[in-house]
Amino acid sequence: MLRVGVLAYPGCFASEVFGVPDLLTMATHVAGPDRAGYEVSIVSPRRRVVASGGVALSVSPLREVDVLVVPGFEPGRDRDLDVRLTGLANEFAAIRAHAAAGNAVVSICVGAFLLAEAGVLDHRQATTSWLFADELARRCPDADIRADRLVVTDKGVTTTAAFSAMYDFALDLIREHSGADVARTTARVALVDDARSSQTPYVDTRLLPRPGSDFSHQVMRRLDQNLSARYDLAALADTFTVSTRTLLRRFAEEAGQSPLDYLRSARVRRARHLLETTDRTVAAISAAVGYRDPGTFATLFAEHTGRRPRDYRAAFRRGGS
Image (cartoon, rainbow, N blue to C red; front, side):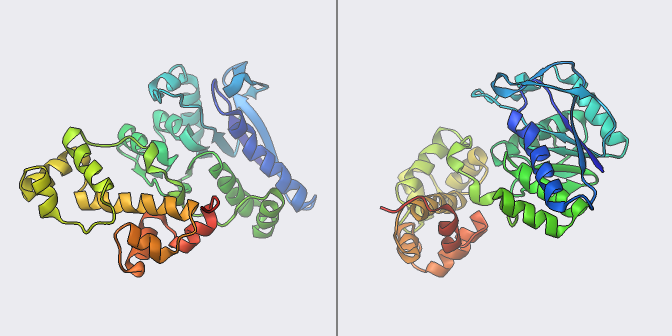
């Protein structure tokens, strides 16, 4: 039996507490009595835990387990992570002690911030929700944050992307412990995608903090309004009555990228919207965002999203107009 413990703490997502255990339970039924199963417990250094939504959890004292799973939490509208992490010193200590004993530690989504506070992400590759990846990199500069990855395992520490990535991790665990056939069948029974490898196609840059200040924002707005036009750096600089050198320097200082890089990202963002919501051909969408050659557009689109335009449309189509 593989011993799996889920670390419950105040404000953790209840669904992420039970998501992995539930899928492991399904895998046990799929595997049958002749294969080793899973012994799952909800553990905490506290006697009582109230999860997100006011859900009271029944918890057991901390115990030695083979795999300790740390669920994520509700960041809140203010996204003040310091407030959310306050008062969790006992949880940080439990994570640290478990890792020091050489046992596997796993975080779901922003549970990675608890691992960071416990010091177990230093000098390791890690991931988290794309929405918070930059913040994790800022707080944990000694970690190598891979914002495009769904699941990252490095020296006994596993981190995952947001919410449903807990199932990607659970399927990996089932594959390793119970076999590929059990993992595949469990995925089919649960209607879980077992072929995902990247969170890049799900990124919505509109939800990310926009870098820069007034000057770069004006340049961005100008580029956004002229996505189909040919990129002309000299004309862009003339619009803001600066030299091309000054434009590039100021934009890079404020936004951390070049105007052309921003334009490419903006074009891909618009193309994603059109692929999701219209019946326009890929060639027509390519032209609408400034690319006469659909092949060049498709290559750029794949670099930004991890999928070719037709594959992206097949996965994310929302109904035509």
